[in-house]
Every structure is written in structure tokens, then in C-alpha cells.
Length: 620
Image (cartoon, rainbow, N blue to C red):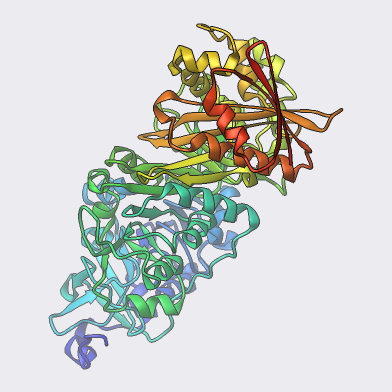
């Protein structure tokens, strides 16, 4: 129940005006700020636009236009000049035609340019609740930069609406800090949620796997971040510290996945700066004490964000090049969206203890005809997240971890998560650009990333989860490291010779697999930033016999945990799925562990000993 003062219009009657009379205070040449998103004061905007013939060179300042934006009309270009910090659908065409302007700036910096006077605001149009008994109005669903604008504007005009939800936190201003009150009674603008596609769902699933129980999550603007929510419902004790609050987050709260109980700061609170969604969402946040709406100065403060342990920031990109430069606000020379809070949250999450900064994008654009992962950014594209600050990149084809990686490693990692039909072209271009060594031409035609269906996991007795997946071309360095950490005995058992060196060509042969006739599976365990390979199993098909030669190796410190047996069974399942008749293997007489796995596999096994080497034949 709203705690509004029922007779407020009588008490503050000297401050009340109609929309048209209120906006008559606006003069030609002034700078006018309009409230954000779904809190746009629609009646004031309509009244302002109706005065277009009386006005000239009025600069419209806005973070994000959600309504009709009637001022963004070619016919009114002499009256209104739009200058937006973020480009939404309502004004995109206007700005791309050169009729309006875009100010690229970190969201966290905007309040400072208001308060410093670098961007003085003559008039501020906002949308608020009726005052409570203490004379406080709530900024409702949009606190963000609106609070700073109201505090720094010369003339503040408020559309006062009983349908605006009263949000908790730092969302109120004193009614006497407002100059004109305009009573209205109309629905708050709503924002529908786009359905997930097959691609965004796969991206969401990959990202959800990176989100641990007890993490605090930020969801950026766009379809992809909110597709993640569908895969977080089984998580425990998640927290929220985000700019944008949506219906997706409401669902996570209602299902119990989000309770904020393990947040480092603002424990038990869902922190946001603005909300766009359905009436159901607005009813849910109205006077709800679990929500804490705070201005951008707090929500987007990198230091505040970084204090949250396990902070996960999920933001999107339009394009990324093979060195890791992220474009998020333009399509070439055409401005498309904005910087928003991506840099603020990316930096904050990357500095958080066990935090993760994630950039997500679909692998292709223009109905699959263009790769979003490119050798070089499109001319005119702007870099929002630099190659030095990018961490995780996720597409529907997998996850690449780039931070601290060389350009060679980055290029391979990003090519491996590009759409398969563009990988060979990207590989050739990366070699031409000298991002990859010339000898990489030898792997052309072998740059294959296998299906996600080949993945599985096992839980060890001590609770450690070992993940099994197809080997990636990006595993080259990890595979090299694995083989150099093996004991001489383990190397001898695997290769039947005493090896002290593994050539670059040999290591490449370990990771460039077609996953059709040859299959290689690695077992990995999580480490601070990525994963360690602790096991490798593979088979090589002989098409003539329809049998495959199998071999595997387990890192010494991970032996005797059942990993070898599990890996063998997984390889059997993959081989049977492909219609392979059975396995063959060569095992040294001394290698009793391997013999034991084969002899107790549950299939018909034949073996013969010759010159201290057992030859096994296993029939499925």
C-alpha cells in the first residue's frame, strides 16, 4: 500500500500546474533533461512537443528514450536537438540520419558532468510518486542519473502520478526541491521482453555455467543477458547489483535463486538504479523493502562493484576483433546503442574477488551472413571495452577467456567460438595479419570445434567436479603444459618411449582434431581464471575395420580417482553413438592400471602379449 499523502494537491496547490502551463516556462535555446526509460514523463513531453512552433534550438538531454520520443522528428529539427547518452529504438534512426547527437560517456561519469556545471541543465522533466506524509516523492522506476539531474537543474518540473511505484532505497527527493508539480493519472510505460532464440539460449546456458552459487550478478541491457536468467533458477544464494531491473530478475527472486544472503555489501538487498518491465514487475517493487534503488553514482561506482565478492557482470557486444577489442555502441560508422555501464561493471567485476567480467554476443549478424568475430573491427566502429580489459567472451559456440593471453592465444580462442562457416576465413586472415604464425597454415581445414553434446561431468569423492569436453584448438598451450608435467613413467606408458620433448607439430596434432573419425576428450578442473587439463582420452578410427584405436593419459597427481575409467566409458559412449564396432589398444606389460580398465570394461575383450606389449580388441 502506497504511503502517499491523500490531500497533497490541496497542500501544495501553489506549485501545481497543467502540463501545458508547466512547459511554458521553457525558453528557446535552453537545455532540457527528460527522465529515463519507462519513467519518461509522457504528458510533459507531449506538452513540450506541442509547443514546437514557439521554440527553437532546445537541446533535449536524455539517458534512454523508451516512449514515442515525439521531439525526435525531422520536421521538428529546428525546434529540438536530441542529445542522448544511450541510443534506443525510438531515436536511433534520428541520430543515424545526423538529425540528433550522441554523447559517448561512461554512465558513472554523467552525474559528475551535471554537478560540475560542465553540462548545465536549465530545465529537468521528471516523473514521481505523490508526496508522502513527510513531503518526500519517490523517483519510482528510474533513479539512475535522474536524481543527479533533479539536484542540479535550474528548474525542475515533475509529473506526479499515483500509478508510479514507490521504490525503496535512495530514491526520494523533497517536494520543495521541485518547482512545478503536474498531477496526472496514467499507466507507467512498460517494456516487453523478447523471447529467447536458440542462439541466445545457448549463450545463456554457457554463461550460467560460469555463475557460481553465492555470486552477485549484473544484467546489462539486451536480449542475451536476460536469456541467462532462464538457466539460473537452480542456483543458490545469488545476489543482484545491476543498473536495470527486469521481469527476468523478478522471476529469479520469486523462485528463490536470488536472496542476496551472501552479498558482501547490501546483504539481502536487490540493488538497481532503474527498472523497465511489466506492470506485474512494478507492482512487485512498489514499497518492497528487498529492493534498494540507488542513483548511478553508487550503482555504477567501480569501487562499490568491486567490493562484492564473486561479482559477475554480463554485458553484450556488437562486434569483437581477434585481439579482443570490443565494440558495443556502433555498427561501423553508425551509432547504434551506447557505452552505458559496460565499462563500469566490467572493471568492477574484474577487480572483485573471484569475480567474472563477461561479454556476450551472437556469433553472426545479418541472418547469419556476417561474422561478429572479425579480424579487424569495421571502419568507424568504436572500442568500448579495450583489449586490455576484456576477460570472458561467450557466443553460442562456447567460451573464450582472453585476459592475460597473448594475441596468438586470443585469436585462436575467438576463432574457436566463431560460427563454423567463418573459422577458416578468420584463420587465414589472422595469419595474414601476423596474429598467428605462418606454420598455422598447416592446420587449415582442421580447425573444428566439436558439439556440446560430447560434454559430460563427474564428481570425485572429495566433491571436485571434473568436466569432460572435446579438445579445442585453444588448448594448445594447456596441452603442452600437461605433457611436460607428466612423470617419465606416465610418458613412457602413454607413448611407449622415453620422451623429454614435444615438438610444436606434435602438440598441434594433439589439439587439431576433426571430431568425426578422430575424437579427443579432455578432463578439466576449474582454476582461478579458466581451467586446468588433467586428463586426455582419444580414439582414431580405422574406416576399413570400423574400429578405433583408443589411448588416454591422466596427470600423475589426479590418478587413482577413477578418472581413467570414467573417461574410457565416455569414449565408448561416443564411439557407439557413431556406430563404431569396437576399440583396439596397445598397452605395455608394466601398465597394469590400463590393462585393468580394459579387462573390467564389461565388453568382450581379447588380448595378446607380444614383446612386452598387450594388443587389446574390445567389441561393443
